[in-house]
Length: 106
Image 1 (cartoon, rainbow, N blue to C red):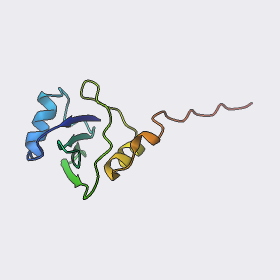
Image 2: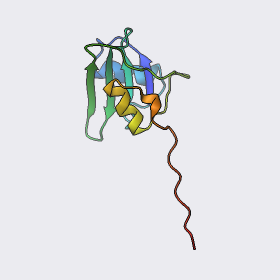
Image 3: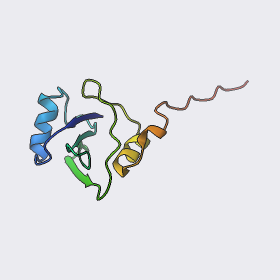
Image 4: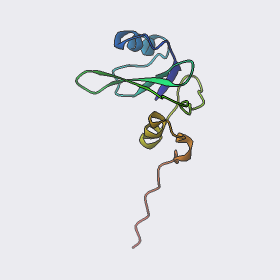
């Protein structure tokens, strides 16, 4: 997931161009790109689903999104962490590491 603060007035084309130019990423890769408002109370999610570009917007009536620390504009989150972030919950409580597969006992 790439994250960046952006003017949320931009639509699909403007955000896809921002992904390509500023983040140097492919907006058609299937990755989820999340943009937040300056006040951290609004999000826009941009994603290519294989048939078209999806743009979703969410804002919180009260409170702010728990925003991940950015390193070079990119953050990797699990599906669970992403769901928690979008719900406005503390995403850091979900384990970022995948569970190891158990060894087969002979």
